[in-house]
Amino acid sequence: MRMPAHPVAVFRGACLLCAWLFLTMHPGLVWGKDRKNVLVLHNFNQDYPAVAAFDLGLRETFAADARFDVRFFAEYLNIQAYEDLPAYQPEAARYLRLKYGHVRPDAVFADNAVTPMIARHLDGLFAGVPLLVQAEKDAPGGVVVPGMTPMPWAVSEEAIDRNFQLIERLLPQVRRVVVVLGASSAEARMGAAVRAAAARHAGRLFVETTQSLGLDAMLDKVGSLERDTAVLAVRFGRDAAGNSHIPARVLRQVAERASVPVFGVDRHVLGNGMVGGYSHAPRLAGRLVAAWMISHFDGRGDAKVPELNDFLIYAFDARALERWNIPESALPPGSELLYRRESLWEGYKPYILGGGLVFMAQSALVVGLVVNRRRRRRAEAALAALNASLEARVMARTRELHEANEALHDAKEELENLNASLERLSRTDSLTGLPNRRRAEEALHEALVRFRRYGHGFVVAMADIDHFKQINDAIGHDAGDAALRHAARAMAGSLRETDLVARWGGEEFLLFMPDTAEAGARRLLARICDCLASDGLSCAALSAPLTATFGAAAIRPGESLDELLRRADQALYRGKAMGRNRVIWDGEDGTEAAVC
Image 1 (tube, rainbow, N blue to C red):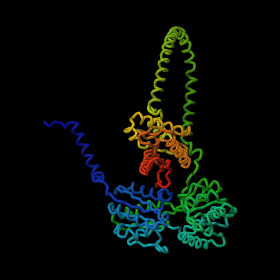
Image 2: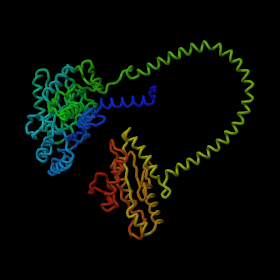
Image 3: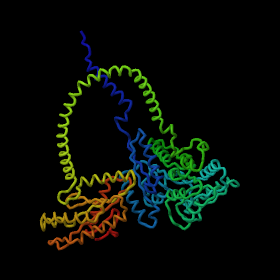
Image 4: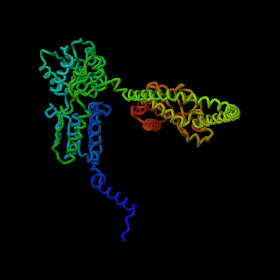
């Protein structure tokens, strides 16, 4: 007779079958993704809005791809910032050749400003690697790198024309357009596109540019325009006097100063008063570049190079539209609307629906209460008699509980006092009487929360008693303890009530200065350093006054406490290496150090 299969064995077999089918349908889970290295060579810093948005688009597309595990490398070279330093490009190229000769990229994207360095100093490094360059094919004076694929980026005549059309559509009363444009060579080419587009609107719009003006004159001009005028902000990187500016910052100033609506060609600068326009979307451009690279990873090599119109979109600031009485219904179809205020229904829909349900529930409850009212009255009479019999027993028991509660309250108060004392001791250094490291870390975490929420900056300084080991070894630990107490009194006595000095460990102290700018912190630390050095306590064995070295750093956006403390610590060690008894700030090369 055949025995039936055991239920546990049947269950195990079913699980194994499901696992085999799942892994067969998803082989990538077994073998893993194909790893690829992507290198992006930017000209500007990563905190530049267009650069940050472009990188975000790249990362999003790579993260969503199921076939490749893409490692993202980015270099922010700031070519224009070091034009007067001839050795910068060769030295930067040496670094790139060393790094990416070892970690070879599978695809490269480069800003047009970086191509001269690639052609002169990185010859052959990217040979055979798909290289997409943000540049016009026939731009005058452009450098061509063998094997590169140009990707258009500059403002085109068509984009300018569409913005002129948009101004005519949204502001029919406008007869004059002032185009904010600088005087650099790249902006001169944009000026040619502006003039060509303006020719299409001759007779309807009078178009003029600001290429002949300095920054202040340009801002004064846009701040005193008549109501029949609009502003189109394109780019202002260099003024007529040859002074360089940060374009995004200048465009924000234009939006703040302008007396008329300001349109623009860059989506990433919206949010500061600019209406919007037919504009670049760097995040979308990043996605398109990532798709182009992924197609090369697939081995197709026939990917479409992103065209300028592929990442130009109509984008607007809803608050600016409301300010200038421009109806949303007049916008082109498919426009992206940012910073839109929600209607009452959109913002409070869950609360309105919830309130309605609560109202209906309350109505049903009222009906039920009316029905049960008579029943309750009958029950109340019976309860009154029962309460009378229980009242005497309750009063007796209440007296007993009251007496016990008084004893418990006294014990609780004593315990709370002990706990408070222990809490103070746990946050106080027993030798110096200063807050200890635990209390300092709590204060730093609270300050970091305020900085991230309200922007209240703060400064941290690490202080180290100079030659402290020699004091202990030569004179004794009692003298070392006295030196620590003396340093603690000197530092605490020089700080403000809102500041904090804590013993960080050994002979190290941490000074925390909330809501303090760097200039104020410099003066305060210099005063503490001078006070400590001249306060009268000297080490007989060393024949020198007690001194300390300070390393200071101010909090930066997006930085963690560990990173801030590491920068202050590094500044401290630089100060010790430079001879001690000084205040060193993070990022200083030593020439500006304050010697006490």
